[in-house]
Image (cartoon, rainbow, N blue to C red):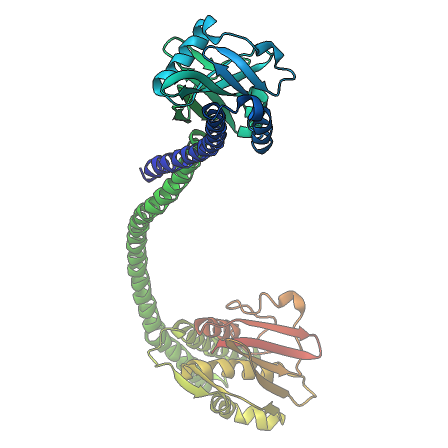
Length: 508
């Protein structure tokens, strides 16, 4: 609607501007023609003065020469006594008109009678002149002592008038078409001989009337552009409006689509929440079963093991003297198996408790954690003359029990898997990264084959027999579960015979 409104405004403004241009051009031609007609009036009035003073014979030629030299818009002057042409200047080229009776021709007589009736200069033409060529004649009726004497006349040829009006031959220019038509009740005589008459009934045309010859001056714009400009503005405006409409439509439909998408996502989230609630319920049941298993393992299983271990030891003390070496060996195997079974149960309990303890997360200094773990192994450290090196340990956030258990397993493994003839050296470092701490525990022990690096953290996975190195194969599994519970990662590097370095991260 805005484009159509503006198009109407553009149409009005463009047409008004071009109408104004046509009017300006018409006023220019109109003024030039008016100047030529004014020169004709003044020249005929001078001739009238000669007639009144009886100076025709003596001064006609000199006066006419002076008038024509000062008025290039005129081609000749004439005196018509009664009905006959008696004088003309210049005479050369105009001899054929001397003695011509203008009343003999019906058209000439009508024009002359109109001049007498109006008592002022009146133009006839254009017509074919007797002396040759196209032109027009303006006649001013003269009266002497109250009686009609004749006419003072001026002749303007078509070529002279074109120059006067600054028009090209054919009455056309690059931008405008011109026409001068005489209205006499019978016919309209074109001033210029066009190949075809232009249509002055349509288009942008300005018309002006000249009473001196009953002429209408027409000026028409050759190629109006207001319709084309309005059409182009409308087309581009509608294209722009369409683009704006599409933009607005998309901006309007996006919230609707977004609202629909949000509704779908909410419904999807609700379904996911239902699934999550079910899984949380199942997990809670699983945790309850695990807690029941832990309770059974810590109480119901340990009690029979204590009884088995006690009776085996009693059997060895009471009947040991009666048994041979083979029998005593069997008793030893049974007692050792009971002890190892009890340790496995305790380690399983420790593994299951990772992440389920109710201990509060708080800032803890890693040096105090390490010292607590070292205190647990003080006897082995003294016996093996082990060196534990550390520096720049920082404060972290975590559960104290889990951190102690973490270092207890790593330091314990470093002491356990050390070389027989070399004092263990354990070096602990802590480096700061962008969002985490990187902790490393390096030893100079026996090392681990690269083939087992991925399996070392699996529960019950042991690389050595129980006779070589005691253990249940749960320690490193507990370490991995502890680190991952705190949001970190763990890995190792190792070479056989050179030692092992465990790395783990803790979020800041």
